[in-house]
Length: 539
Image (cartoon, rainbow, N blue to C red; front, side, top):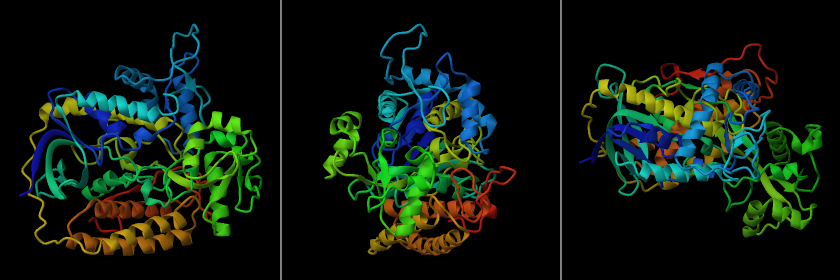
């Protein structure tokens, strides 16, 4: 018999967005927060930068809006940008109330503002509030500490969503989400969670690529679950790539800070030859997308595994004092960056598209919400501006909680739902199939749907993803579910959404660059996919 739970609010995901929702809900609501692994293991804790907000008296809301619109390549929704920026100060004040210890100014001035602000790419003013170079960890630690104090919130770790439960799936009238089937990784059994409200906060889908800065859990689970349930997705073709991720088998997602290039680091081919001068007069100081495309071009042209970032010409003392984290991590892997170059590759970093929502986080299905990287708000457009992503989590997470609180008195208890049926499936004795398909998917997505695209590459990827989906569909129907199988199923679906979105965009805009259509179209339009019109079967 399936273990069953019932809550007022079910939050799937325990990063910045999910915990923000939980902490802003009324105390009388019974809330469950599901974490895929441990509570503080997602992308939030790994964020190094900071949070963009209008905090300094010399900064303005209009300036932040203008910077964001410019970075977004004409695709930002101005209403979403304005909503986010106008609520930025309140979000930061709330974080400080939760105990987040941001870096303070080194000296007092007469501004009345105690915290240090830095400046990042795309911003015209200093507006990045941070906690040294580990802002995400500080935020995650503070929110986790607070949520553990809430008696109405239950934290359930090692849970991964399988599928949403909707009225449609229960053959009931209406368009409502009433819960989810969830795999308990500790028992290997699927559990039934019924809830009056469901919030998807599962993060992005960068694990679909061979090289990524994201943790292993970034497998697009929420996007895939929402799509199968009938939600629209938008702008899935816009995947942000960080130019320099450490290339080493024991360091899957360690970023090499852009500050190394800022301090004179040179990008070199395997033979030691510099190459950035051939792509941009700013050379190593060109924007992220330019540098990433240049590295990708050289790797593909030469058929090599990586290029190299060399700072060894600077004094050793300078390197170790300015880049202690990078120096120590590389040294642990046998690379002395004071003497030798660092092997690097671009890495998938952020999913700009996702489940379509409004300013309250509401999706196309009643009582189903989405927040954070799994959602598409219109804030990021064709290219996310630095440090706007964490801000989005807090602004939309708080708005989502407020909307649930306003509705809760009028939303009835969820109906009964059937137990998870695994009577017709067996334990798999062929897990090598999952491993092989996982590797194949991430490799062809990297080769054909990566930083630089062509129609031919996209069609090759589409052909392969169609075959993979058929094979995984058959596997899913015959064997008991596991984390690896669920993640592969979700990643393959999200890959298909990315490919179909990229095929539809006949231009190069922001993060989507295609050799067949190098110019911008006159009109900027979102790429919106709707399940009923989608070529693949919802499975």
